[in-house]
Image (cartoon, rainbow, N blue to C red):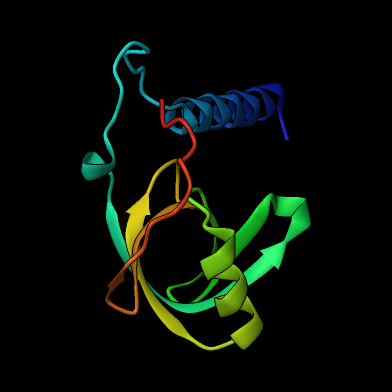
Length: 121
């Protein structure tokens, strides 16, 4: 392969890397504005409650959708009973930070009241 061909391949690879990095960045946000819970995306999950000390406590092991969610408004008394029962529940809530942090509003159509949630700045 000649020098021009190698140079072209290098330039195209660098262009691809720069383009990928540019797309992966989050858009700038106003650091002074606070987002309310009602503005966060709603989600309904069918799955089980589990306890993982390494992740900060209780979480949802979702079957539909299949994912794990960290509960940000934990009520240990309620969640402990559900974790010990290992039964599937339907959870309605909101995604707070990304796709892994869940603010629970209802479990099996019953209102859920947890501890004070994490700061959602």
